[in-house]
Amino acid sequence: MEDFDRYFWRSGPEGFWKLERQQTFREPGVQSWEAFRRGEWDESLTLIEGQRGHYEEYFRRIAGSGFALHRVRCVEEPISPYLQWELHLLHLKAQCGEDTRVLSRDGIRRYETRRTLPEIVVLGSLVMYEVLYDDEGVLAGGIRFDDPQHISEYRQVIQEMHRSGEPLDDFFSSHVAPLPPPNLAGEQV
Image 1 (tube, rainbow, N blue to C red):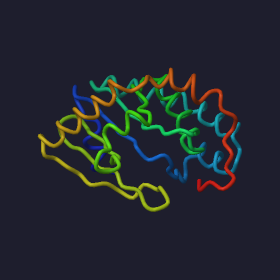
Image 2 (cartoon, rainbow, N blue to C red):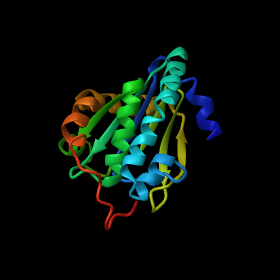
Image 3 (cartoon, rainbow, N blue to C red):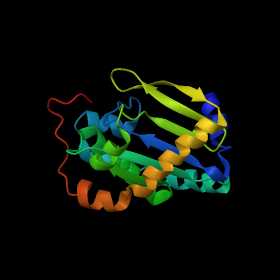
């Protein structure tokens, strides 16, 4: 984490680019996720909204540091309960300054000719991480790459995905906002 933080604030004009592929994760310790996991959907959404001030300040600090956050969120339908929760959080982050686009199943297939896409974070031109999760979907660490050519190639692919993706606000309005609270019966959350 120390390593990541050191490079994060030095992302520079190339910015921060994140590719998220998995459809479910576990977020132990995150209050809104814990409420979601307990089946307290309204409380979970209230807790997400309660983070607005934090994210507004966070994205002001990022902009003041001379870079921006860009995310490609792969979304398969039907939307998993976890992803329904996360898309509410990402929607708030987008309102506060994160540039997120959704890549749907057809867009994902184009890039998964040989294997499932990895979870990737690119920090400017300095470093890239393949983010690793355990079998239950909990963050387990990452593999750092610092070859400039490798970083540039991945950033370009993520940028291409981003350009072809749907703006999160549009996707959220049509695919997420109308959903009833997620049904956690039989789901691993």
